Length: 249
Image (cartoon, rainbow, N blue to C red; front, top):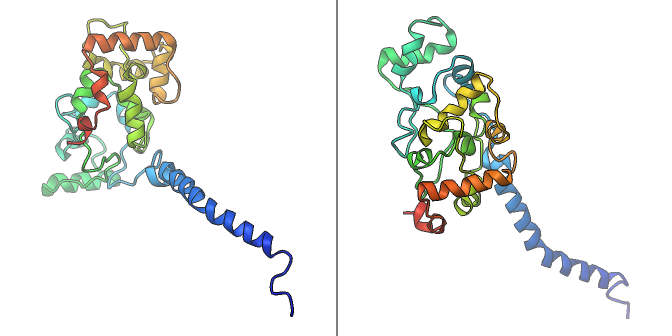
């Protein structure tokens, strides 16, 4: 009777069993890699808008303060998107015939708001409050990246839960206070950084890191010590920050 299996059948069987065992692991790593990739998170991916808007031009070159457009960032969970009237407070006098700004003029004349494509969006089951973060001196760049340098706004960080928990578990790594302006409140100091960048003042290493988008460098030991002091000063309850109920209500 002829041999049913060739000599290499055992090797093939072992290889197939190993491949079957490794497949779930490989698939898991592949899915994890995909979930963290820019293709999924959209980090640093510019999103087309009805009107091209440059933070670099408006905030740095023209010196328009963040709160002029984002009016509710200090007092609401939502930072706020400027209405057409805010845009037209300048553009009724400058660049009045620019083709790029036609959607703004049409919106103002018709009373129909411009529908902007949202860059930063959390899932519906996540609660986030801008005001509490601003009141504790958390810089805009910590979450949004180097906004002041963006020609077209892009997502600065993934906003995945693991990323949020980095700060909630060790807030001393992210809290910062400008000691050169003790008369300012923590809220005011958040926006003072942009004036220092615009006026080309000398920045501390910590401020350079913040200007580049916070997560670009680890804080120094003295920054960690300062952060721990701010935790005490602001009454931050670190043990509660990682509770599910803080963000999921």
